[in-house]
Length: 478
Figure 1 (tube, rainbow, N blue to C red):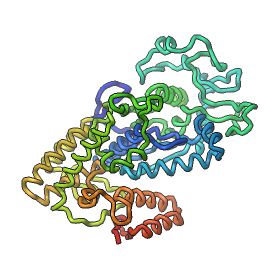
Figure 2 (tube, one colour):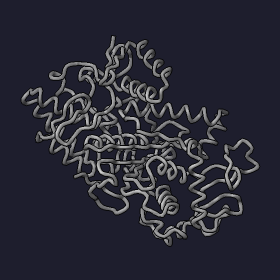
Figure 3 (cartoon, helix red, strand yellow):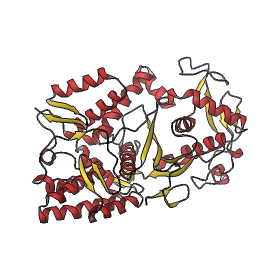
Figure 4 (cartoon, rainbow, N blue to C red):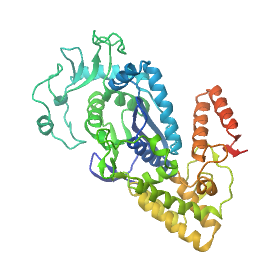
């Protein structure tokens, strides 16, 4: 049985979904005012891994990862650039999709934007006000009254007294208490160009925390299975989400809280002030995207991840070893991309290759993944299997290696292409092509056929031919 470390209870627990054979998961996504950095890359890859394993374990998964497209930073950046907020956010949403696609990250089932859910936020704020947990301050903002919610601090393990000691003594911005946080920001007369919506409390815009509560509730229900995000969001963002959602609906909000560890650079926390801040795009200029994905998954998701060129070089060497084992045993056939199939515990398919879950290596792999997504141990199984492939030259062992790695989103390229540097005459490597195909699938789902045709044409001009089949989309270089 799958066990997951629950930040709320601070221990590993058997995963028991609210509804049998279904898993509903919400992950806090990006605030889109700049390019995604390595911290974002870890969130994207880690929860893509969780999503894949839940599906491989037979669950019908609904995965929601939101986009914050209204925020103080977004407003400031748009003003600095002299562009509209929509133009800014759409530009960086497109860039995020490109980066995620390159890293082999599948699109979530739902990708809500905060600006699309303002009515639901207003409804939740009104309910909090009705329940005596929200008040309108003298400055026009609507705030959450933290001390009126029993259990505040249960996720972070902080008491109100500890939190109060860490705050300023004075009560600023019209709050009744320094611990209170804003639910609705009243539009200031001095900010004529500020983005705002009508509300019962006057024109304004939502606070950051209420966005995720409203979107999660609307798309997954008032009570769902898993909520994830980076460790930096545990407090105050996720703590405030609990207070809002449980305060409004009087029921448990989430069963399992998951948090991935921080990214460090040469043993120091990554930050712009230290000058060790890297965007995904900067890293991908130097390293193959699959190497970066491999590097992220090689560490346990809850542990700190230390980024350095030496670690990336080591990851490249290790991934090269895996691909080399497949080189003489895997024909260079086009990759088929389509709807990811759900496997049963006994038999399944990953990346177009069957997984035999009754085989000893697969059993070890499954045991590792069921132990709180222990990808380092799962990787060790892959390397043990690689040794067998090299020793026996068994096509069956090679197929199993590729299939198990496919569960993690790895080893699905033509080995020769990876070993030669990844890119063919088109100049696009396999990861970039597959990212475009994923984007095309998403546009077809949205019935945006003009955009789907544009992507097909763009790939054809780059020397890549697509062929749609009932099983998915195959491609080949010409």
